[in-house]
Amino acid sequence: MAISAFSGPVISFGQNTIGNVTDYNPQLGPSLFWGGVGRIDPRPNFNYVPGQNFGAFTAGFATSDTQTISSAPYALGAAAIAAAAATTANTAMTLVSTNSTTTGVSVNASCINYNTGVTATGLLLLDGFTSFTGAVASSILTASSVTGAITIGMTLTGTGVNSGTTVVNQLTGPPGGAGTYTVAGDDTVGSTTITGQAALGPNAFGQPFGDTNSVYLWNPQALVSRAVSIVPVSGTSTAAVIFTVSGYDIYGVPMSEAITVPTSTSTATTTNGKKAFKYIASVTPNVTNAITYSVGTTDIFGLPLLSNFFSDLAINYNAAAITATTGYVAAVTTSPATTTTGDVRGTYAVQSATDASKRLAIRQFVLPANMGSTTGLFGVTQA
Image (cartoon, rainbow, N blue to C red):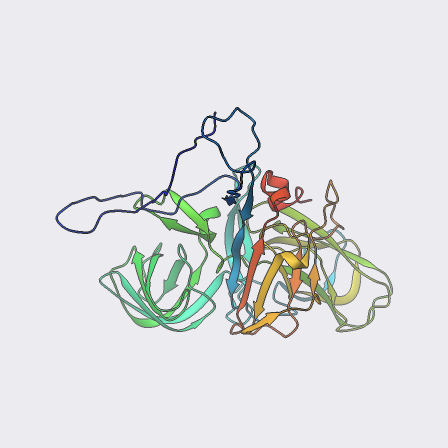
């Protein structure tokens, strides 16, 4: 296809709401562009010349500032994923079975496998759970005392809430917090404690636009993923134990990590993983050991886009700009990735403990060299 060039300015408007003209646009939503957009260099020899030959040099600067995370992550939990238990070689540990308003872990979650399109069930979902006081009148939810974040597409449960009730849109209040929302599936609910869990599919973490939800933007409120920790709880290990964590990332891509707890690791000495998970399917040790271990979450967070350099991030945590590189780990570009290599997009570890109130906001600046390929944007294929 040839380049389309025309003289601006260009205005993209949603729908006409002025005067007597009826101009309803059911697909109203943001415009999406491959590779992003750029600012043309208007100087001679760099600018576009109408009628120029195919392949003639035209230059510009990328505009690539993208907010990828805006959330107040739950407090980490040393046993958020699995309670302390002795290990049996090659037998998966028993994962937690109840939702938690302390760690934000949600049980019985489902994920569509990015590679196969098959739904995986019975998973743990990290930072995908919320609890609040709510009431519904005429399909309008009024929420207060919110723990976690209410995100579009969440499935709601609570006394008097119909099965399958979902959050459709936010009307008032700060994003994800106390305010009003439209819901589908229920018209009236008396004031009660309501919980929410991210729904099935990649659109669980997207903000839809238009009547038929044709366009989604990845929702920074929902893209929190974090590394896993292994904690010896009783006794002292006399042999190294490898725990293989299997699950999925924020996009539903399957991934695994082998976390080695060294010999002679004492009680409460935590070994943190390096890869950021959104869903946990299993945690399997390779050694039978009377020492008990718990599996928890960490304050190490995954970046939704590949990051090669700290200078390409703008991080704000607990209302303060982060200028030190402490806690930042760049994307590991080793290909193919293995169960022992680091995160394929990079991670950042906050330097004061999360508590479901400190907001983590991350903006990422995509280098032009990374714009032209899936690997450049999202890293090498997960192991």
